[in-house]
Image 1 (tube, rainbow, N blue to C red):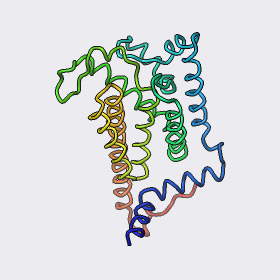
Image 2 (cartoon, rainbow, N blue to C red; image 1 turned 90 degrees about the vertical axis):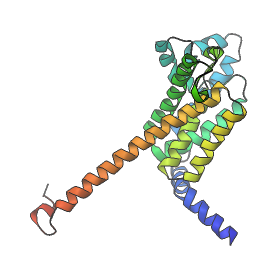
Image 3 (cartoon, rainbow, N blue to C red; image 1 turned 60 degrees about the horizontal axis):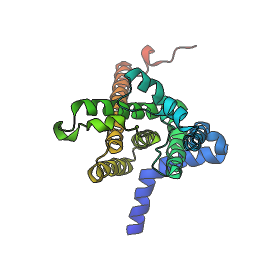
Image 4 (cartoon, rainbow, N blue to C red; image 1 turned 45 degrees about the vertical axis):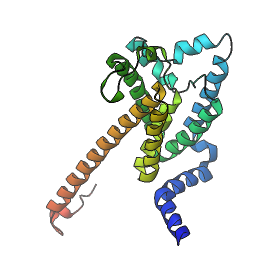
Amino acid sequence: MGEVRLSAFARREWGPLHRTVRTALVTDKWRAVPLTLTAVCLTALFQVVQHQSWGYGPVQEIGAVRAEDPLWLALLRTPLSLFVPALDLPVWGALAQILLVFGIAEITVGRARTLAVAYLATLAGTMYARIGVALGPDAFAGLGLPASDARVVDTGPSAAVVGLAVFVCWRYRAWFTAGLVIAAMVVEVIVKPNLAGKEHLAAIAAVLALCAALSVKRRTADGAAEGLSGRRRPGGSAGRARPR
């Protein structure tokens, strides 16, 4: 009985998502995820280059974002910062996350939305760092940051990965999985309250706000469509399709 319930839960939670991804990969194979493959290659390239004596400086100049940077410079660097992995973390973890989450997002919500949501999540983390440092460490509910965090490099691709995971879960109504992702990020901040963890929460907040806005827009559009169809009389001239 337990196995049946677990199987039913898995089908309900991940069935539509699994079918969409599987169909795309079986049909187009790696051609289904060109954006993802580009992101993985860029991240690997930046990782190799920034560990060279001649490469660290250039990578920092084009892709490292800090709260102490001028706003115009931070915004200029933010698109490439998605692909600059943290120096102190294993790059293979970042590459696996990008391959999995970017790949699923690219197939399920499209390339344009994948890029837009990834940028939104990363930008939310970047802006939070600036606001948090301005608020200071004594701000209400721990929203502030110490002044030393102004010199810490932003999270890189991880904020984009977290934001995309939440967005895809919302799109396919995988509520349990979305809850797990959010809970994991909250636990991360509790256990290790650093800049990266709080930027992840900022990314989630921005994506949830986007999801809420899209839901309202969809409900408004559906309500307008239902109201229009309700005003049409069955069999009347308003209900007949006009010839093109």
